[in-house]
Image (cartoon, rainbow, N blue to C red; front, top):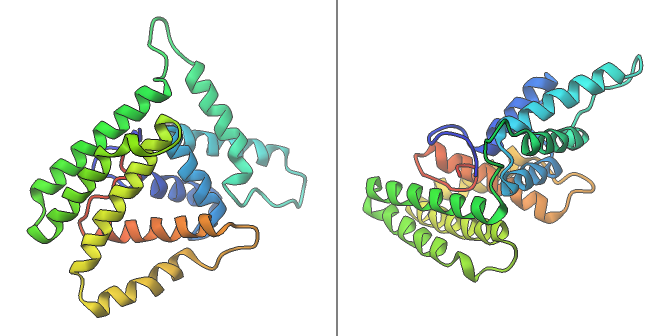
Length: 225
């Protein structure tokens, strides 16, 4: 489960902005980086651990860099530093502190947090959007019907719930505004880079659509729990 407080930027946005700040240039990350960030979120890697790993990885790479060589330009180039930081976090218990939760416990905690977010958002939404949150609640209730590990099942349920929230939101927009969203998110995501899968590019488009929905006042689950 994300360690971001409710109302904060989503997991993806925090990691992206932190990395771009470290790098000192650029406005976007690649679809392959988007896919990696989504994978860390699914695994429950705390955002602070990701950011710490990125910083240490970049510092190490800079210290080892030959004169004239370029610094790392992607999150994927620093992924091993993040994974080392995650392993250190998992093994870094102090005294009798409990171990990080197992996958089933983490999955249940994430699902419970998602239900709480949906319930709260549904109470505050207008009637047009409330049906989207009702549909999202039903999607979360069907988490066990998905295949895969506990975290994979919850991730699939969150994706289904978000799809219902976004569908209800899009249905309320004027036709011209709805038609303008496609070109806008494609511009934000940029063209699909060589080597990037179609799935990774679709995920990048989804992330930008969800960010726009959040700015419009909606509660989206992936990146929030």
